[in-house]
Length: 325
Image (cartoon, rainbow, N blue to C red; front, side):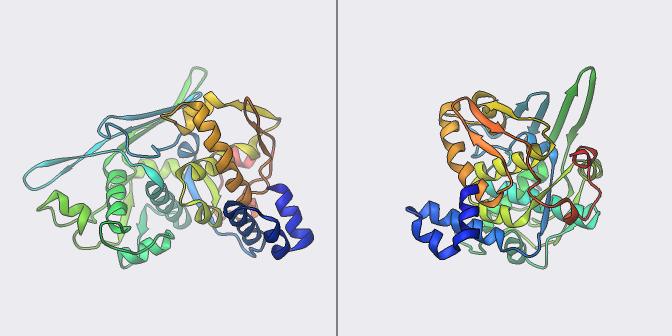
C-alpha cells in the first residue's frame, strides 16, 4: 500500500483507480486518497490494555464463561456480569464484535477528551449511533438492539488487566469500566432491554479506577482510520495493535503467527488467522501508510514507524511509554 500512496502522489486518484483490478483494491485506493487529503486529524483514544489483547470477534460458545487473553506478560480477563431485575437475575455475557469495539473507543475517547468520568452520549440513541458512524435503523436487523446489548455487556462485565515485568506486577483488578449506566429503566421484562429499551438517559459515568488508569495508559488513534475499518473487528484490532507497537520499536522484530493468535484469537488455528491477517493488513496500510509492516512466512515483520497520528495533534498528556517513542 505504500506504493499506492506514492502512485497517488505521482498520478492522481483517477489514474490509480483505473489500474485497480478488484473492488477491494479500489476501496483501498479510495481510502488512501481520503486519508492523504485530510487537513486535520481527529483523535480517538483507547486504553493500551485493549491494544494488547482483543475482545472476542464473535460471541463465544459459552458467553457466560470468563474471557481470557494473554499476550506475553500481559493478560486480559473479562468476567461476565449479571443484571438484577425486579423479579429475577439475568446473566450478561462478555462483549464481542465490531460494535463492542466502537462503543469502547467512544466511551474512552470522550472521557479522555473531556478529562471527565462522565460521558455524554447525546440527546437520543440515534444521535449516539451517528457519532459512532453507525446506521440508525431499527427492526430486527437494525443497529439499535445489538448496540444496546453490547453496551449493556460492557457496563455489567468486570475487567482485569495484569502486566507482569520481572517480580513486579501492575494491574487493574476486577473493575467495571462503567460505574453508572441507566439506559434501560423499564426492568419489567429482560427481553425488552434488547428490543426497545426504556427511557433514554444520555450520560454514562466511567468507574473512577478505570478512568484514572485510562488517563495514564491511553493510546491515540485516528478517528478517520477507525471509521473506515469499522466493519471488521480483526482490521480494527490490527490497526490498534500496530498503532500501539510500531512507533515504540527500536529495531525490526518478527512476531510469529502462533504468537499473534494469542492476541487476535482464532478458533480455526493460526494458519487461518495468518491468511485473514494478511488480507486485513492491506486495509490497515491504506489508512496507516506510515506503518512499516510486512507479512512473511514466519509472521508479521514489524519495523520502527511513525505514529498513526501526529503527536502534536494529541490534546492530552501522553503516557510515559508514548512520550519516549
